[in-house]
Image (cartoon, rainbow, N blue to C red; front, side, top):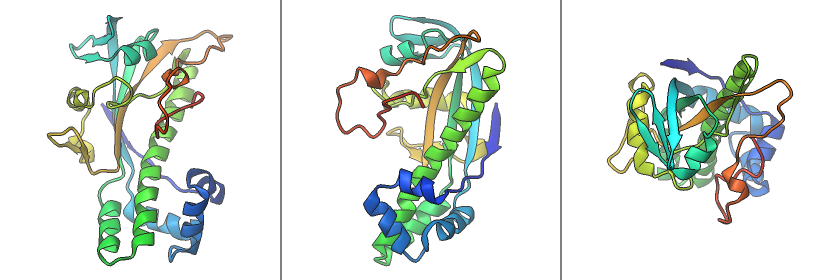
Length: 229
């Protein structure tokens, strides 16, 4: 198992892209003072850290992914995502609890705009962190002749949130201070768990990893990916 600390900061264009127009205006008008002020707050309150492990896939059949060490994840869509993969990277990322505690404090004092911005930026920081890790692993394994699939989390599509319990047994969660409730929600809240696969590619292979969102007709899904990350 491995873990790493990741530094996250947002440029002006990042915030404009990640937040919608109304959110971005609220951010610029708040006491945080736009990008520089928010980055100072993030450095003080957010501590992105990630723990991951790489597991060998034994076989994929009948809508299930069987790992060599004995764990089986059941999800026809996950099985399709990992169809040509030899290994699977299991990860959990968190930014800690300090930021959400500060957002709750601001909310208690009726400073709702600042509380909202902090909560939103906490979610975006966790997302930004795992995207950076995914991109880094893609570059690392591309040099070794492998590609990476899109990442997939318990609760996505047909993968039941209860499978989170199996994932937590594979990753060193104690090292990064993430726990799981009886309802399979993570604490701290600003945490993301999931997997993505490693599959062999040739130098002239231009095939994109399978994206289940392309066929999905569900509207208003916050996790929808219209193209490969």
